[in-house]
Length: 99
Image (tube, rainbow, N blue to C red):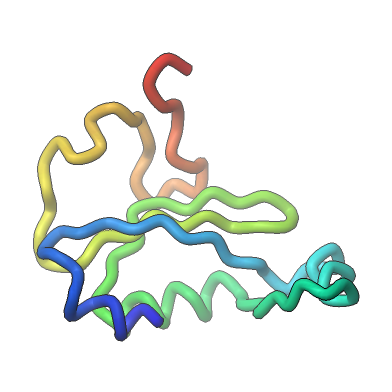
């Protein structure tokens, strides 16, 4: 998926996606009709890097991980000006406007 969207993404493009790590709660969710593809964080990080994406931030809960990524090579200054976050801190993306 990451390699497929890279060629059509604009320079410096960002995207946010959610992954499900292999945790007991996610294994239980697979017993329902909802199919989850469980991936470890290091697997996703390697896939992103090999596909040319840079991880800007990750927010983790016990069931999900949210990843903010940017097409590598170009940094757009001020693109996230409304959000305060620590890059690659593992603390998430911070507060949005008015929060």
